[in-house]
Image (cartoon, rainbow, N blue to C red):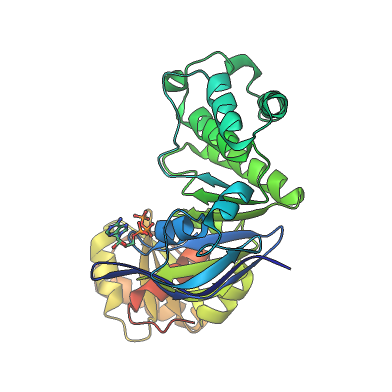
Length: 311
Ligand SMILES: Nc1ncnc2c1ncn2[C@@H]1O[C@H](COP(=O)(O)OP(=O)(O)OP(=O)(O)O)[C@@H](O)[C@H]1O
């Protein structure tokens, strides 16, 4: 059973096609990741699915309701955590939660009950009277999440929920996402963090409004990365990156923190040639090793070719 189904969904702003004929299906209970560079169309797709934007053409069913014909019904069954978090800084934690509970739930008693439940569930007890403006980044993010799920929506949209949040809070946040999924809720999450993509059941890559790859993280790596990855930690990152790009047996080159990753057909076979090349070019390095590919390696390979065909 699908909780989200889109049919050639398209949104055009002036001469920008922000979402370009997207057709996808998301199963009930799934954690579905949406990845893509800045401006790829992730936020626009999420806003369309939340019933906040009207499509230029195409349609989508969210929880069985059409975003085109029944956007108000869609809004009742979804939770949306936007990039801006949507918190009231001059209200306390409890007031923020109870404010959103009041908007979404008509029943006052139920709104109060849910506010208490959420405070308990998300461990807000000691911060309940703290103003939102005084919370740390991680707790603000948690509060924004709380306000998005206070009405127990079936489907939850999280737009870059962990952007700018420290690694510990990010990990804790993912526990909350897993809890939602374990309760049978469907989650669509957009992210820039590739390690977070690995945590999703399935991911879609979006580039210039089009879905260019969609599968489980494992299958995506198998399908789109036809080769093995060698990681090089050089002393001069940019010089090494530029030099490696000129090697004809290298399929893809990408920078990952302080290392350069190259994709080659057979890493063990090519290793002596790579070491020889670095030596000849006078490129000093700290470490060269074959590594397991990450979803980020696929991302580099996929976004390299901007004219990639949509699937
Ligand atoms: N309201 C709008 N009016 C005009 N153009 C828009 C509007 N909203 C988005 N766009 C354009 O649509 C394209 C997709 O933007 P969108 O915000 O959906 O991308 P994104 O993948 O979410 O990017 P980011 O990761 O930076 O948030 C961009 O070119 C953007 O400039």
